[in-house]
Image (cartoon, rainbow, N blue to C red):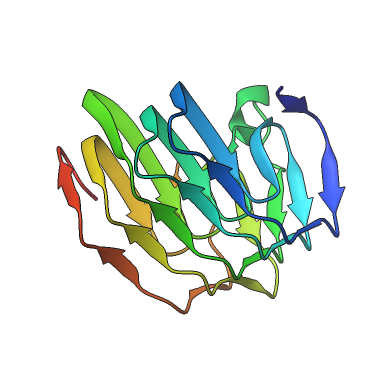
Length: 173
């Protein structure tokens, strides 16, 4: 389900979120706290649970973020939605063979894709991004945020590595 006009504060996740082997899906919005949201403000939300797509899972398009995968704050015509003081301390791992020509991948340590402002005093990623599988399509990968349309980035820090031992075929940024 999609969340609309919701304010989330003080949310925490400590459990692993995984697309298991043998699972097949066309689109994935995978986030430690929120998968997909329109007009969402997140404040002081923290993910400590690993996010992963298993080796023998089949996925076409992926938006993945340690805290939130997709935040479409701009859809309302407003720009006052925020991601404020949110952190991720867990690894994000894609071991699967994913995508097709033209598929889109947004993989960020804290935020996958956003239209919201990112502000606050503590916005950090301490979890590795590990791609050991094969990604076919256009990939945007960032230690903190993969794709930001209008965001003002303030006080964001990535402390860890992005490890690519698999392959990415297509445009990469």
